[in-house]
Image (cartoon, rainbow, N blue to C red; front, side, top):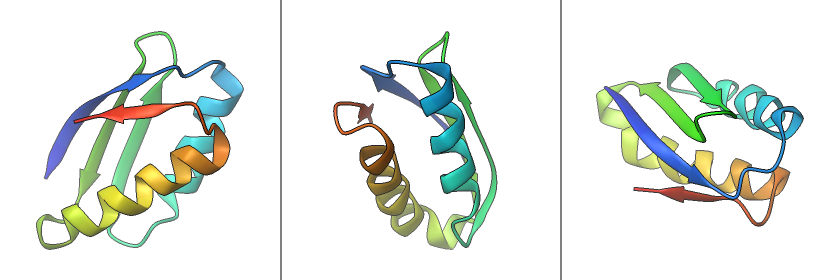
Length: 72
């Protein structure tokens, strides 16, 4: 399942790359792309693990940049 999410208060491209790298390591993630300029994340995850992976991805985003929010 591939879904797109808006990111709010993503401050720098380096943080976006760190988030992308961390989320890519989560089991069940097929592909993730975080675009700093568009303030957007595209997440491709196995259907049966999507909700679980999304929660883990949100936690990774907060670890890298505490002020950044994922808009569902």
